[in-house]
Amino acid sequence: MADSGLDRLVAGVRRRVNMVFKDREEFDLTSGDIPRPLFYLSLPIVITNLLQTAYNLVDTIWLGQYSETALAAIGMAFPLVFFLISLGLGISIAGSILVAQNIGAGDEDQAEFAASQTVTFAIIASLLLGAFGYLNVGTLLDLIGGPENVVAGATGYLQIISLGMIFMFAFFVFMSLMRGYGDTITPMLVMFVTVVVNMVLDPFLIFGWWVFPELGINGAAYATIFSRALATVIGMAIMFRGNRGVQIHLSDMWPDLGYLRKIVRVGVPASIENTGNSIAVVIMLTIVTPFGETVIAAYTVGVRMFSVIFLPAIAVGRGVETMVGQNIGAREQDRAGRATNFAAKAMFGVLAAVGVLTWLGAPNIVAIFSDDPEVVEIGRLFLRYVAPTFGFTGIFHSYKGGFRGAGKTLTAAAISITMLGLVRLPVAYFASGEMGYEGIWLAFAVSNVAGAAIAYAWYRLGTWRDASLTDSPGMAPAPDADPDAEPATDD
Picture 1 (cartoon, one colour):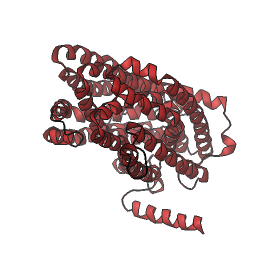
Picture 2: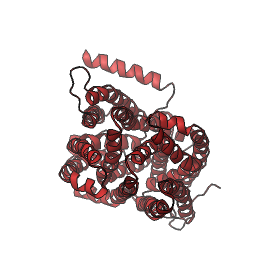
Picture 3: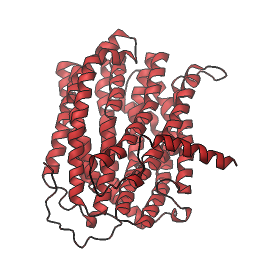
Picture 4: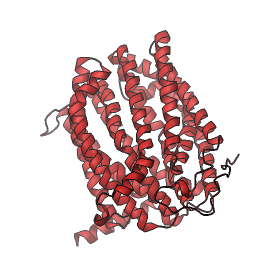
């Protein structure tokens, strides 16, 4: 009876959600028009990522009210959390690509095997990385430096997150595998439930409301881990039941070395990309910290805002990844190219408009997070430097998603690392010596434009000319694939 009641409740929620969103069964990613399926695939990802970012934003808002030191500490801790997760994130990306390509090829059994193996290797990786993080938090923070009280707060936060790393990883894997299948609604619904839990727990644990002790920044960490654990339980239950999206099977979860080689081939470049990005973020923090606690706080607010503003571009990039993956599996390379170009043009227009609004409302946006006039002024400058370049991030993420979906994760990694490591960091280092912290803000703007130019130029060079089933790990070769065919550019 309980199960029946729960099923009716879930079915009722889904009926209402489907008034706005569409299930995978209601559109075909490999035929027909492009805008509509890409929209319905990406919209739930936008909302899911917005909800996911709400974890960080809620923490930032509450900790900003708690103290400026706590706000600076969370700003120092987030890049290191990103670094630890990035070391193994390639596993979930590889799983998403392999599931998408096998679904596109019509091989559901192989897609389910790929999903099951991805979960296994993700669990192993999360345990290893959690142990590494817990044991090396002090060393990692010493590399960044910063005020002693800020470092102390970041240390406690990172140790708690490291102990719960398996839950951080497991939900990322759930979202990636469901997205590869083409179901982006279910992860959105699960994320909504867990974000509500995190929002409720945060103030109780941070400030010590009701019967809870006052834990400060550690309270934010405990709230995040508890809510991620809840998301993990729900997500794994959904995939084992198999009534929504891709299904996993216990019998397919014994580690398979053949599949591990496929993960290495596709996932390692993705892990390198994400790890390189996280290292770049940490290095950027070392450039920011000498300017003091107030600049660190303003930088934290600006970066958190970018994480929200760029959600549509990141989500569409993920949608492109799935759409391209399924079309490569279905041997529709030209359609994959058209989807990528459409996404780049659409996201440039949308984010350029958002940039105008952000430039106009910059002071009010920063004031949401801090009532310190100096933090508001420095944060206002940060947003106004970067806002005019928002549209270029849409181009960057769209083409990067296309490369990933085609199995070209090494190309995506090279583009991303070039933008951050060869453009943003050098400009920030040298410009900050001449302009102070405003040189760092300038570096963000310059690198956004450069990243879009690099991604588009690389695409035009024809790196998709060999993006066929022959390049898709775990799939049969395509007898009619032409390795010399030019990529579609849809200009």
